Structure formats: C-alpha cells, structure tokens
Length: 287
Image 1 (cartoon, one colour):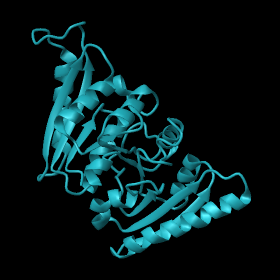
Image 2 (image 1 turned 90 degrees about the vertical axis):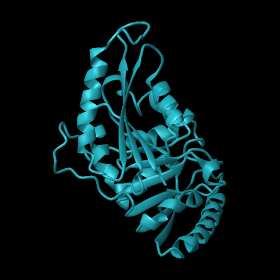
Image 3 (image 1 turned 135 degrees about the vertical axis):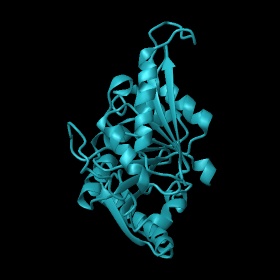
Image 4 (image 1 turned 180 degrees about the vertical axis):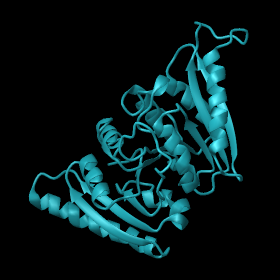
C-alpha cells in the first residue's frame, strides 16, 4: 500500500485539496510536504540566504499543523534550485526518500504551474518510478471553502484493463480490502472491419469475466464494460457516466493508456478527466 507519500506543495487550491484527501488513503505512515523555490543566485551556497525559501518553510509548517493524522509522520522539505527543471527536484527527492506514491494536483502556480500542461508533468510521469495520483477539487473554485470535502476514493474504482502482464487487477491487490465496487473497463481501439471489432469486443468481455470472478471472490462488486473508440475519450466518458471515484491505469503495457499513444492519451486523461487518476508504475515491485 502507499505507506510513504510525497506531496509537491505549491499553496494552490489543488495542493490544499490534496491535504484534505490524505485521510481517505489507508495505511499512510509518512507524509513529505515538498516545495521548490528558485535561487536568487546562479550558484546557491549556505551563506546566501533566500527569504523565499525560509518563508515557504514557515508556510509549510502551518500546513503540517492542518494534517490530523497522529499515526503518520509529517515532514517539511524545501529545496532551492538555481537551475534545471522542477521535475528533476521532484524525481530526486522521490528517489532519495523511496516514496511509494506522489500526490499532485492538475493545476498549480509558481514554479510548478506547468504540471500536467507541459514538460514537467511528462517528466514526472515518464521518468519517476513512483506511483502517481492526480487529484483536484471539483469545479474551479477561486478559493477552496471549508465545505468542499474529498470523497472516498475507493467507493467505485475503475480499472483500465489492457491485457498486458502484469494485470492491473494484480497491481491493485493492496487496495482491494478498501474497495466497495470495481468497474473493469477495456476500450477496443482498432479493427479494420466490423467483424474484427465485434470479435475483439467478444474476446475482451471473456477476459474481463475471468478477472471479475477473482474480484467477486474477494466480496467486491465487480462489473465489466467494453467500449469501442478512442481510449482516452471512452475512459473519460465512462468515468462521468458511472460517477467513478478513482480511475486506475498502468503507466506501460502492450496497449497501456500511457504507452499506446505516446503522450496523447495520457495528456488527454490527465488534463480532461474530472475524476482522480492513479497511474501505477511500480510493476516489478508488485509482480
């Protein structure tokens, strides 16, 4: 499970909303609040103090006080960079701390405002081995009111199945005890004729039925769904129709939504889906 969580925090609505969602992720043992500032100098040294760095640390300490999780250790880390990309700093600390999950918002401001819109998000997604949870508050609130709560992420989970190995259902074993229902989903994206498409749909349903038997054996309500069309469009449309609480997909695979169309499908889901998106990357660790 996600015992060590890294939160790149930029003091935006999305960052504040993520803090509210922490309680909905079971078994967290350690939380790292991470902020990046730009150095005022070409070369940073201990003798050269940056007031922005000190101010960010003080603000994060205030955020830390808002996290009411007595069984979880909370640390504040502020890193000042004089060059390079923000994604590099995120990847460095994720590797150094061996985090099991990175939680990020879709929108931001300051030095990480391009996340999920430009190269920073792509670099974190492609090069950081940690699992990634993208989550944001509903709508576009100018200010996050106290009444906006984070819903339970595991009530109605959508697993995007691509039939590559390891199966996404195997990667989700740790979260099954907390899941109420699962929607197994596959999108048929190719076929030169109607006959080929129908055959692919039939095969997909048969494979999903096999997985559903395993899920039902864990006392989880499991439904199967096969759609025909663009993977990203069908995933987003389905998540809205069924009021999905969490979309789960692998980062790679023979037909994985990240690797299938390099950049395009992932970008479309990350930017357009209004539901939380969990991208599983640590395949080797689970398989």
